[in-house]
Length: 100
Image (cartoon, rainbow, N blue to C red; front, side, top):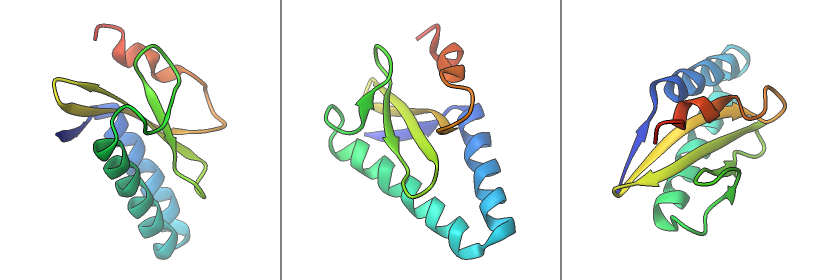
């Protein structure tokens, strides 16, 4: 299996990383490591990782960071739909997968 970020999800990840990096290089690297670990968990256990937040979308919390990795699988590809802050704009990402 492979992993691909939707363009808006990649932008969200980069914005969050930059925000953490402006405050602490260690925090930014921790955020990157936690995101990578969540992707690896999802790839290793596609149907048991995360919890369902929609018909097809799963979410893994990026604790201790206040973000979640939202993703779905299609044709052996993990698509990252959003790297969403847990306290902002719930469900805004749904329009990204409307046609899938």
